[in-house]
Image (tube, rainbow, N blue to C red; front, side, top):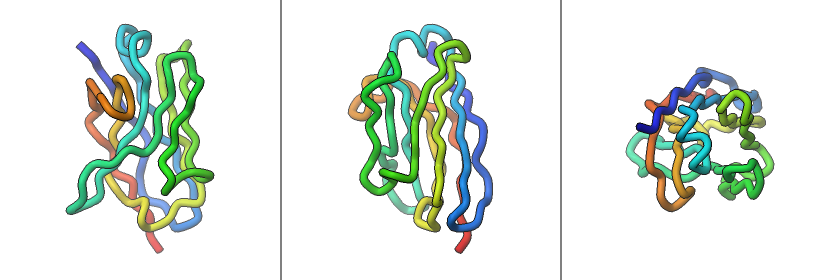
Length: 118
């Protein structure tokens, strides 16, 4: 069973930075791409970024390109989302995902709140 455990997030002022982490079970990490989605209040969940099994081919949504970076550490079985120059419109619950991303997520983390104040 896929298990994803997120950490990070919180409250930051506009222009600040935050980092999210997502630790996966060994099977999950070895089988799937890892990524992040987010959901703002009243909106649908949207794709943010993903990275392939071997750490290549990162995909980043246009709204965050140039500000967010995704990476994965095989030894720690952890994916990371480094967020810089945060904007109030980045405020959302961020979900870690594993699967054939971005189109077929198979497992989700519990979500972590990111709030950016203006």
